[in-house]
Image (cartoon, rainbow, N blue to C red; front, side, top):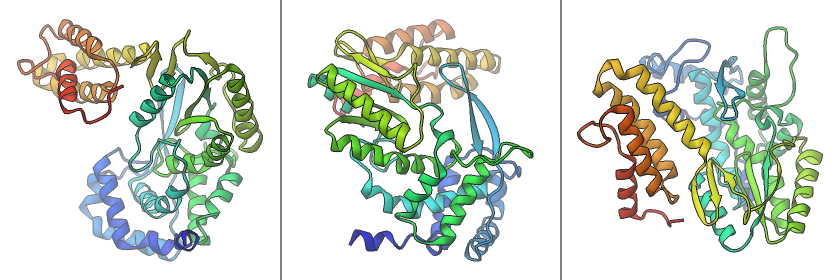
Length: 381
């Protein structure tokens, strides 16, 4: 029954106007900047029916051609540079339309150890899974890091995996065109048949499709794997089991999937003696807190906003600070963060010359955590 349902993923579904309209709404909600063509969300909305009609026509006649990506460089936490690609608004809509069609067909085949970019799953669930495993005594941890994961996905392997669900040649060709648009590095650069651009709508789905064979093999061998996109670790009772899992990782990821484990960032940790970091949380001696690097990045971003906005007045400053404070606080609230949030509130008060709260209009981390404790929306760590 499942195999029969999987075969309906087609260009006809992608080009359905209801699907394109839903994809447009998803892109509009996420906002985002213009691509290389300069067309903004507002520009597209001004003639949305015309644009969607032209898009549907191009998809139905198999003439839709994705544009090149606008390259944007972001600083990574380790101070290296990360290159992301910003598609045009139209390309983001088409990718969302493809995602709407493909995701329901791939989702049932994904493994329970995979938490990233999936409906109904979250980073918080992955953090809870790590905390639960450590509490069960699985204290030997293989912490793994894939080097340049999104830039090194092998297209041949990815195409083979996609073809298990997508049996429509025009749709496979369009996906190939999106991959090629993301791979072009410059006018004279050769086309390298690997990688999917970070920042593209389809890249998270492709990452899960690509790594599902790894998930299945690790689970079949009895390893406790917890994965969020390309961030993952395994938990074990003994060092020997961790060593065996590490070797299995190398065999599958490097030997079969043509990826590279980062030699300096992949290794075995005894959680009784050393902290374990995952998804910017630090697990150490029964506590779960933000990593020191996460706290430092938060403080640096706050200071940068204060420096840029102080002259604009307190209202403008609060408008810029509050999304950062609330977003950071909401993400880390599941840890034992009450003392840390109070310390950071005191630090914010020193930076602002006024304490966070209603009087200043600046969000308070301590108040956010108190509301969370009252609601108990998630199992506490």
